[in-house]
Amino acid sequence: MIQLKIESLKTGEKIFLSGKIYTARDQAHKRLADAIKNNKRLPLDLRGKIIYYCGPTKTPKDKAIGSCGPTTSSRMDIFTPLLLKAGLMGMIGKGNRCKEVIQAIKKYKAVYFLTYAGCGALLSKYVLKAIPVAYKDLGPEAIYELEVKNFPLIVGIDSTGRNIYGKK
Amino acid sequence: MKVISANKIKNIVAELCIQANLALREDVFRQLKRAYLVEKNKTAKDVLGAIIKNAQIARKEKLAICQDTGLPCVFVEIGQNLKVSGDIRQAINQGVVLGYKKAYLRNSVIIDPIKREKSGYAPAVIHFDIVRGEKIKLTVFPKGFGCENKTQLKMFKPTAGINEIKKFIIEAVKAVGPDACPPYVIGIGIGGTADYACLLAKKALLRKIRNPKSEIRNKSKMQNSKNYKLENELYSEINKLNIGPMGLGGRNTALAINIETYPTHIAGLPVAINLSCHALRSASKTI
Image 1 (spheres, rainbow over the protein chains, first blue to last red):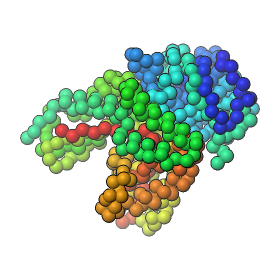
Image 2: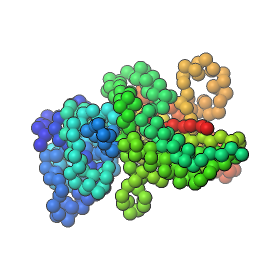
Image 3: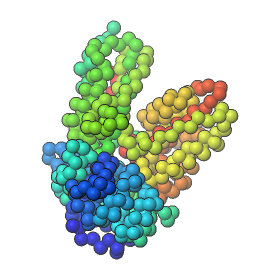
Image 4: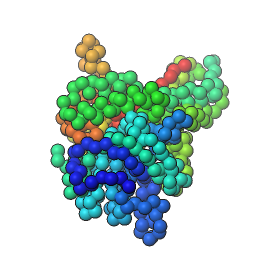
């Protein structure tokens, strides 16, 4: 688990994250949400975890991972409140979130981070290791465990529900 | 009659897929550097710096500029006096698979859009055009879907004025906001039919971004070029929206506005907008 004092993070703050994060995008979210709804066991315990909305390219031979930037977060909005309820601690992506997600972030004291959008080659430099851990049949949409070091993040929505896109 | 083999086309397409995904277009890179220089907002400048560094790393280390290596779109202009020996469509799709696999690009293509099972590299979306001569021009345009999802079409009344069109475009960019990786290159197609306006908007993205430096040198020539005024007006208005890189504010929301027009019907005025993220990637070869 990542040692982060979620409640001390403030919207707009830039941080560098080291530890384990988990990729998940559209189809993985759909499956996780279905499992939660049907009281099935999850292939990944979401409690205290950070999900990264990312589907990397194939891994070149001499690298830990291929290009791995964030995908549009709002497509995950319909599933996010359910995942937060199941214990998810944080999310990394790009772009704005809907009202329901912001409310759920506040309710469950979670956090939403942004990272450099469209910079998959650069971000791959902060990933030390990537291993598929669930839904391997989904290919680029499988859940990968990424070990990251100094991964650059900006707090997009903090645990009080303050939204970086709301203050302009 | 000149003959080209399908196999040769396959190899060129493979090469272009790799080039487009790994080496950012020179005109886009130049415009990003220009954006970095003029940006005053601290966060925006930091993000633009990361975008530029990303392109440099991708080129040097042969990594995809973006993990979304797109739905490969291939534009083919074939001279009417050129004969292709073999199946050109098959050759293009084989070239896409070859190039994508070789460069470790992402298999983002879903065969059945409803069932959404296993993903692959092909087929590409292919547009054929017959032109004069005996050459062939192949263009590979990997289109990411973060921005493709934001495409809009509006069928205006023929009496609509330029201000209504401008308003539609500006509102469309506002609605997209931070979601599709700004700063954007904005492709606009005006005229034709509904489908043709959409195609024009996409083709507009393939047009080289104007270089402000050469514009000063060729000012009168530029001003005479079609849509110059409208492109410039939209460029300055959209850059006042303060969306900025990653949507965190700043004066760089659009890197460029490219408009293509075509004759249309007396009863209509189709306008399509096709956005590209800052990683606008394409590569061409003529033989």
